[in-house]
Image (cartoon, rainbow, N blue to C red; front, side, top):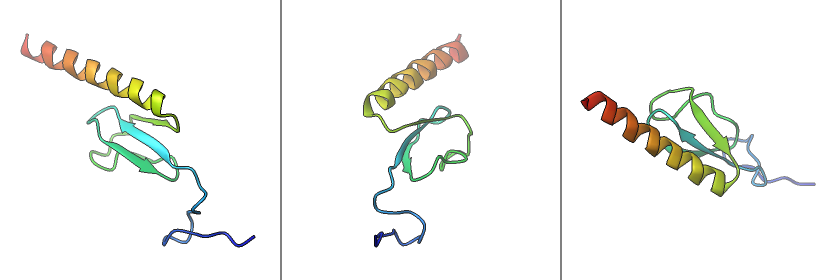
Length: 75
């Protein structure tokens, strides 16, 4: 079978993409492989999924955590 690849020569068009959310800075991005760290801040605290619903739950968790930590910093 003749597989088609992205320009990196490694990633196939048929490979699934991980949906990632950095739980440190909130950056959301896709990767073909589980990434080593956030592409924005470098944090290793990354939520990985293929599922949109799970990603939305993680976003709410992140926003709730950040809102709570900001409140604590002000107090």
